[in-house]
Length: 127
Image 1 (cartoon, rainbow, N blue to C red):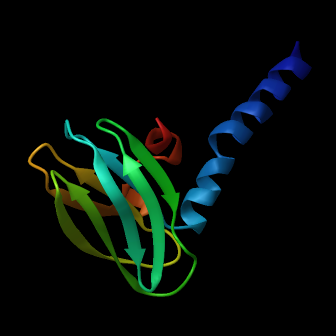
Image 2 (image 1 turned 180 degrees about the vertical axis):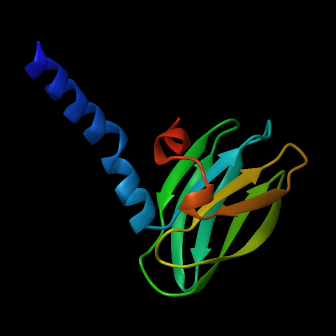
């Protein structure tokens, strides 16, 4: 019984804790479309790097690992209701920054940036 308990604790540690080591070693972003409309041509710009997301359906989200690098500004560009929009302007670094981009029902976007000590766990972002 003791061996099974130790095995269960090791597995729980690996499943719950190891992903969070990645969480603090890389910067991430989650783009969520909370509107009732499709967002087209979605892309996240981080400094000179461009991360193409493409189409993001209503209610959908996408989790991104941001490029490892130095200081940069993150912004998001998307097309909704036939209008191209640009939002954010968040400061990020190559590690430890976590940005939530919310495309809202008013067809605008807002960004929230956290550092790991004050942010949700990686597992919570995946849900």
